[in-house]
Length: 484
Image 1 (tube, rainbow, N blue to C red):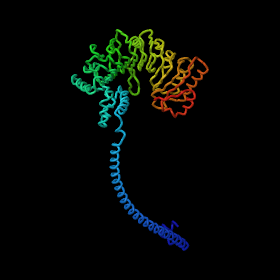
Image 2 (image 1 turned 120 degrees about the vertical axis):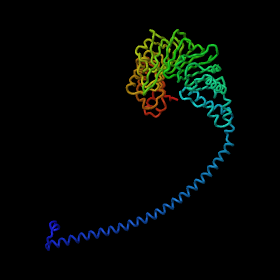
Image 3 (image 1 turned 30 degrees about the vertical axis):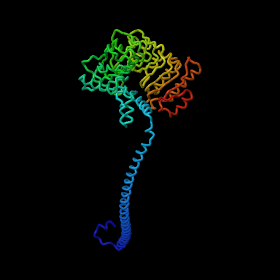
Image 4 (image 1 turned 90 degrees about the vertical axis):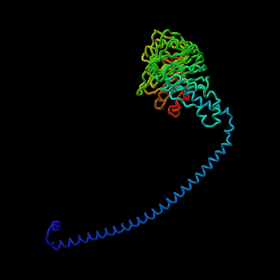
């Protein structure tokens, strides 16, 4: 058939019959398709008509919706005006107007307590007195007559305050407003340790904080106070912080402060100069010398523990977040009951405990993610320790083995009864099942009378662990307290 289609040959009769049949079949198929096309065209026209009707209906509904929305907005505006009128009238009838000023004063003082706790932080807290005084005349009157709200002299130096009289005028004006009986002084971004003369008026201060930021290269980095005035005769706490600042600690440093019992030195290179004159009144010493770059802690201060023992023989609390060394064969800190350290900072940890003694140590706080070196420390100093605090620790399988060694039956902490976990940011930082295993094993040894161990009676945990599945097992053996 293909040969015939592409040639001029006249078809044979039988071929003509076959071709006619094929043509009839194809005509029938074409007619069928024409009928379907016609039907689909009719359906499409009906669909167009429905769309036109729906579009018209949608436009009508949209116009109606806009009318409703406009009406709602108008009614809401009227309702809000009525609500404000009701609130104004309610305020007149409110019991707040009958609250005595003494009650507001107590509330303001509670708020001031939060400001007081944050006063030594790098970021200056906003004054509660200014905040509540901006609310209404009544609160402002109460704030102005509540002297404790104004008791923190928090002053930030400016790098442009090179002219002394201009700075003193500002401080003098400040003191005129808050009074000279302020017990708390915070000096931020100071350029030296020489205090402004105008502060000599403040004779009742009990706490002084100096934050150095703009060191003057021509000034001597040394605390300078006049001895001929009663300045700071009541001072109990002195805090000095710096950023890579070199400070000379000399023998008569603390003599202007006969009542001083707490000294905090942060981020400074300290030079201990002779002669050594003991400061017997000091009870708490805190030295921090760690800066962090790229999440890596770097110690910039090394403390000679022998000099600490000579300078401050009556210390009861010692906080050292820095590297240690010792310049004498032995050093004994007889009265220290609390020791806060970062054991990973002590590079000579294997030799140091043999030469330094804390015969009356009652509690140890180890700061940092790791407890490397803590085992050697508690082995030497843990005989009388009743409380072990682990701050910011990340306890994994490896460190849990060290914790097991510390709490085990080798007598490193025989009197331990309290275990505290502080400043844990994430629940995943501590595997509570490992802690439970270690504590349960310790208490079982204590119950059997082995190695003269005391039971661990209480464990303090952050509240992020209150739904931990291992908590119930732990509570069957110890009393669990929660960190506030």
